[in-house]
Each structure stands twice: as C-alpha cells, then as structure tokens.
Image (cartoon, rainbow, N blue to C red):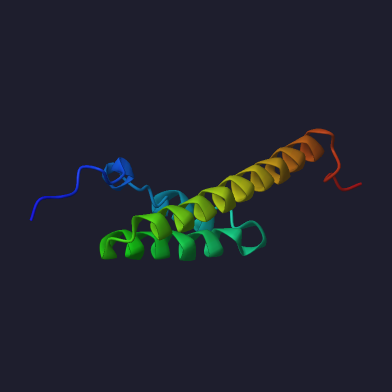
Length: 94
C-alpha cells in the first residue's frame, strides 16, 4: 500500500530524546532530582519513538528537554555561587 501523500510530514522529522543530557544531569547535576525525572521522560520518549507514536514521543522529549534546561541552569547557578563565596573567603577558618 502506498502512503497517503496528504499526511503530515512531521513523522519524517526525527525525535530527539535527550537521553545523554538527562544521564549527565542525573550523574553530575542532580538538582532536586530533576535529572532522574528527565531520564524517565527521555526513556518514555525513546519507547514511544520505537512504537511509532511520534506525537507522544515529542511530548515526552519536550518535557525532558525542559527539565534538563532547568536542572542545568540551577546547578550552574549553585556552582557559580559556591565559587564566588569561596573567592570571597567565606569558607576560611579563623
């Protein structure tokens, strides 16, 4: 059977699942366990992609991407604040 040419071409667009980024956030920047939740959504996205449900895969991938962005930004801010406090001498003993 030939595929209907009137269908949307969104099925041809690859779905990114952000699993590597999620694993990085889980391992190194697990701010409020956002890395763990991002891994769960990434795995769900990959499963839906393998099942052929691209719309649901994109939804899960979008949630994983947002969680990864939030985890990366918050962890970076905490790291920068820690470096600034160490530079200001807040951790020196008297």
